[in-house]
Amino acid sequence: MNVVELRKAMPEGNDILDVADVFSLLGDPARLRILVALSSGQLRVRDIAEVVEASESSVSHALRLLRAHRVVEARRLGREVRYVLADSHVRALLELAMDHVGHSTLMHRLGDTHEPAGSSCANGSDA
Figure 1 (cartoon, rainbow, N blue to C red):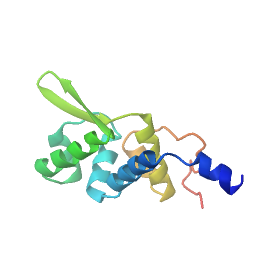
Figure 2 (cartoon, helix red, strand yellow):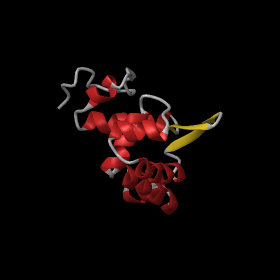
Figure 3 (tube, rainbow, N blue to C red):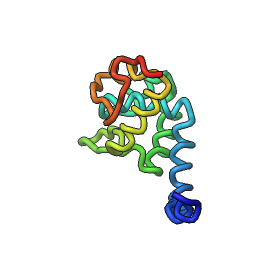
Figure 4 (cartoon, helix red, strand yellow):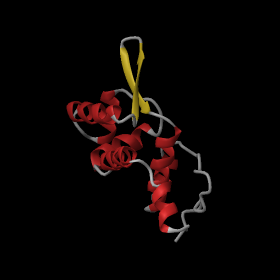
């Protein structure tokens, strides 16, 4: 592909900014811990706070940011609100990032046995 074709194939500026925002959100260790906790399924704020060893207030603040960028969703069950990863894209992005740094076993310990499509590091020995 030549330079002109590559320039035409580039995503729009707003799309690039949106993706950069998502990566920025994922760049914070506290928010990343919350997302790893949510990879096991729906959780209440108090449960997330206990798992990630943070205050409920800080977890709530992080969840507001993650919801605003459509990374997590809130689901009301009666009087309770539970949070969950927004969709399979978020889960795949998280799994790929964890696989990239060699921590795929963390995702499996949390009860998720799904391997991302095309994953070549099922045994954790990818270079």
